[in-house]
Length: 423
Image (cartoon, rainbow, N blue to C red; front, side, top):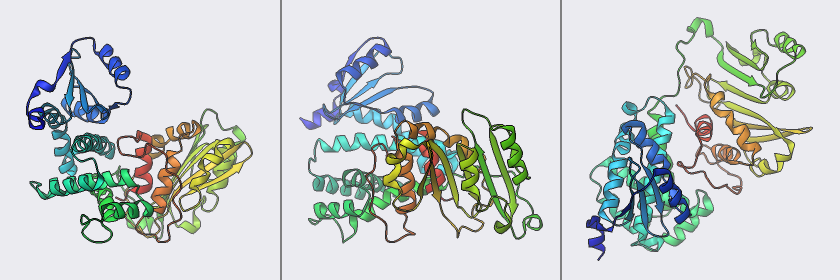
């Protein structure tokens, strides 16, 4: 019976109707269905044809609204028709991810396709769960898939799928790794540390892909003679919804004669010795007195994002201030959130990186945080405290939902690039 369901497209039902009406009916009839919007976006960006796809794991079906908008198809997850649709929609994505240096101009394009990959993982997991209801059996099945891979890239992707599954099922922390080892230790895991290595493999998979696509670069870098003994420093501060007073602008121009000061911003982009830098040691004070959002970058890799928020939100971000990377300071009715990456040994690794586009991409985080979305603080804690470069990681705070690749907003992806990614 299972073989017939896989190979026969007769398990697909279709009904006609207006596209908006059909999409509305999907939401009404399948309230738990996940909209696979990242697969749709990735396919549309390069194929020019838009689909609407939903995964309803509870009923075991994939729902597909055809591009013409006249047909809604219900496909059993284990059907051949479901497999064909997934193949058609994701083959271009997998091909691009297989050669990222040739396929992508910017990392946001990689973010989009990694989100599509995760949504493909979600469907594959739902398909496999129709046959393997226990975690150990599922892991054995994925191991068998890895062994049957046609090439090294497919094997790496299938191994990444297993790491993604374990991270979601058990958590990407020490306690989660231990639980996974206990559950899967019945002859499945080849040696101690299997869960941790497998989960880390998903992180490495993403890093390898992203690392092949360059961040924005400076058009030119000053000659060695002009920058001898100095480093590239970049500061950008902005007000939001208000303007600096004339007195404030005069004060800032006097303090920072090399800065470009306007009614709503300050930009200082220069090469100098750190000890002679006019902002060195005064960044927090300058921001706190005048601005609502700010960015600091140094060529060895350290960087900071400042955001001014209502003080009432301090308790929401407090759980993430117990380790590295996240600080808060209450100033009257405001709280200043400081998200930081320290990379003092990067030396010239970021010499030609262009930080000028970064702050604009990050600004929507301020409204997100003000609305109660604390994922930015969680991303920052994770970036600073779960790196292999550190030992003695503090206790992991509760992580909010929505931290997977297909759940992050563009501004959260920008924060990941700022705080987690190396060139």
